[in-house]
Length: 243
Image (cartoon, rainbow, N blue to C red; front, side, top):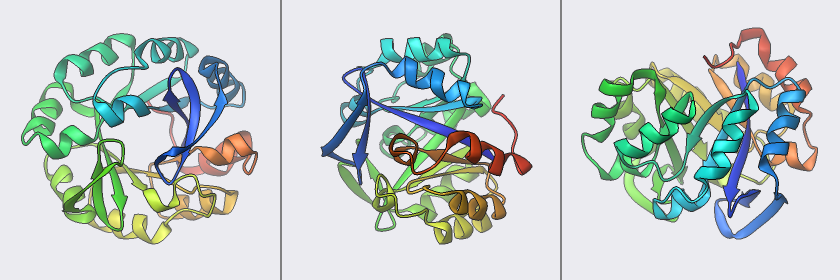
């Protein structure tokens, strides 16, 4: 299983939200590139990046910061505000390994299929769940789509990678929703990356036992609840670096 340390960006800073609430934001660094280097020095090969402003309003507000992160020698997967082919191409031109479609996957019928046809495995879909329903626009709007049905739909479109976040677990340091990922892995063929609440080596072990492709580490890294080097060691028995 692959570990993806996370950097969420707002106003050029590395931040974390509590349960996706922009009003409950903690700024951890005004130099995200140095954070990325610390992850690399701890043994990470991959980096999960979210432009929180972009997720909320569809812009690329943190594009220049992401450009600097792309120089870290880590393989980046980037989400937040990616709603057009032009923006996908901008990130691909930076050398980003994978772009994550979220809101556009819900609001633009046919878009995901078109982008998968053109960009292949470089297209992932982020599926953010609130009480089992898909949330969009930076988690500020909940749709009537159930997460499981939407995951099946993305799987049928040929999406290779799904990043699934339980919003209620995000930033809480309360453990991952392993039951959700167990159900999901039984339903779809796509590689699954777990996100939200991954706090301990026990969480890593449990997710790895489900045969998941990856897990995202966020707040637990910034607060010292989990050691990145130890997490990578725990997960590497069945993981490969993002290519």
